[in-house]
Image 1 (cartoon, one colour):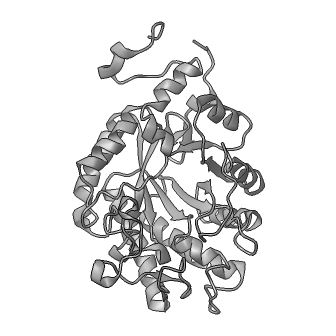
Image 2: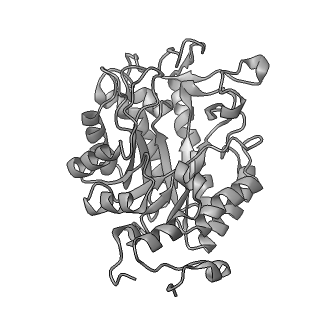
Image 3: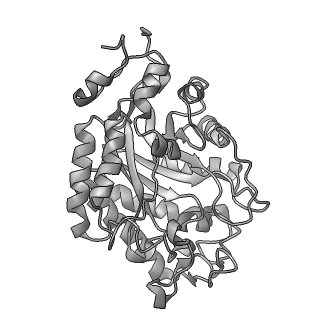
Length: 362
């Protein structure tokens, strides 16, 4: 075994929280809730990844209100009754030596659809759906009706909903909050000129389009402990001419850093259905590198990162501070245990699994 720790297994301290390694379980929608409640599926799904050795385990996109859900089956944190089961889950994650995180989300115009395996189609009121809201009355695609354009009262409610969700997240035992401002959901819709045609203080200029996200960040920080990390996931580009782009992402990252955000989780796309995205291994790592170097904020890389040596190279090249993995964790829930062996280092295994460790390991 190597006497020097690989970068992937070097601890990362952010405020008062220390991740034991640089591997994070990215939020992945499970579409397995009823009325927003977590259940044993979430306990086992998230708990297994903690047993598998991830430094940070982030829950799926968790709706801050019923109308913020993508589907009726989404996880939620809009009422106090949601806290009890979430608290059980975060306690188990922490017992495994991992840090529990939550992604707070509002789906915007992409709300009120059926779960992916039920077709992912828009749900009318008669089908159990609701009226989606957005910065402008522009539908996501030709099949969807136009969303309701948010007025001042609607915007104020969204800020309040996120603030209340942050307070509940703290009570539920989460140690990291990530705000979802990517993939064509509400905050991303405000950021991009393709979906935001407003003429008030929330539309037009870069500063105006960034306003809602910054207001929510400030509101969340009022409830979220100063000792705990706050992340924001963004889509660094829309992959469409005239849409949100890398340069705007760097500007936004600088503003977020000034407003006590600790890390930018760098994804891309999702705003419009016709974007041509050059998907390949590590295709979004360049965004993480650019934002990190030009804004000075910590970043996370995500997107078809599937192997230990690939993740290690990203960190060694200083392209990111944290590696987020999603689908690979569905395939390989114990990825960190495998990765440590592949990189020639020793990490702690659950005592219950000790007898399965490779020969030569302690």
